[in-house]
Image 1 (cartoon, helix red, strand yellow):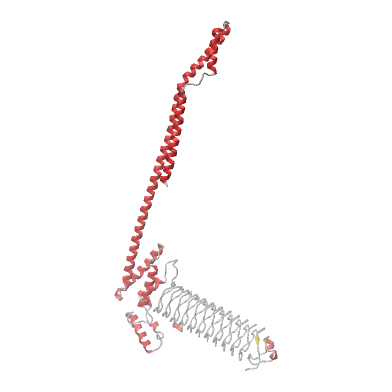
Image 2 (spheres, rainbow, N blue to C red):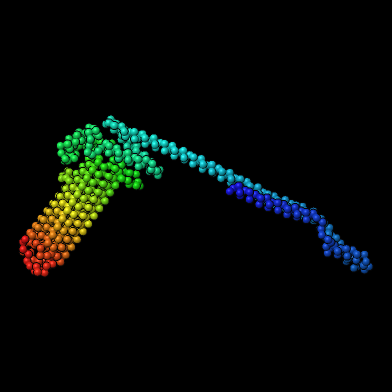
Length: 530
């Protein structure tokens, strides 16, 4: 492009300079050329000279002579100015040529300087790029060397190399952080896979006699021996007697801690931690979202305020686990075991289990006060004796769930599906069951004082001996329900639907209660004890 511009612009300047030079030379030649034919002044001068010689009158002759002399003076003056005009024209011509030439050479110098500057800039850019490429290459080589060294450190076995393994784990974390800071992700995924494989290999569940030493080996030996004598994977309360994970397996605990604090802005990936032994692990506030902990053992672990969104905990051992204020939204706990009492009781206070899958999970005796179970799937789950006080179970699916003796006071079960659920002896005082599906549910002996059951579906439900004092059953479906022995003092039944198969407490007045009996032949009748 620059060459083309030079080939076009330079001839233009040359042509312009030649044109100016031609004009200047032409003017000079014109100045030096003889004048044109005699002018009017010259002709008058000749005429006056002839008249002076012919006129005899002295006065007239004197006047004509004076005029002739004036014209001669003017001609002499013009003749003297001509060299000056020639010199002036020559000087002006030289000035014009000098200005044009100076402008041309100044432009050429400016152009040359601009080209030199552009060339220098290009060379500088090439030098900088070469330096950046060299640094990137050196950086990549350094990272590769650091990664290889860290992996080698992880392979050092034995208690005497624990500090070496810890150094390798934290070195891998630093590599991941450095890469994230540079906007790269060459080793990030590999580091995650290496650490998850390390945890699976060094803390498998069920344990093997070749994966641990010291206190851990002794505890695992007891577990293995007991497993050989029974069908249970682990005897109850064994984990309470063993040291915490960070004491018995500091390297495994460190790897879990690193996996649980990913760089900010990292896209969550699925961590493969299935079948790992994390008993009594301290994992408070870790971020393990979408991790797979299928059949893992987390007995006695502390996961308070942890991010476990979308985590897979199917068939996991969760007795005594602490999940207070943890986020388990959309988590899968199908067939997980959270059964426990006292120190073995799972603690899920304020836990977010919205849309979680807890189908057939064992939550017997679990502590779920104020837990968010909105939309959770709890079909056939065992919640016997669980504490669900003020829990949010709106639209939860509890079909055939076992809630016998559960504490559901002030719980929100609006729109929940409790068909064929076992709520025998459960405490549902002041609970909100508006529009809930309780078809064929067993509420025998349940406490429902001041409960909100407006529009609830209680068809064929067993409410024998239930306490429904001041309960609101307006517009509820009580067709074929069994209410023998139920305590209905001050209960609101206006608009509730029943039929001739509905069994009422002895002496209950249907007319006064405002119940609508679908079979008109039974309207106004006083129900008898079935």
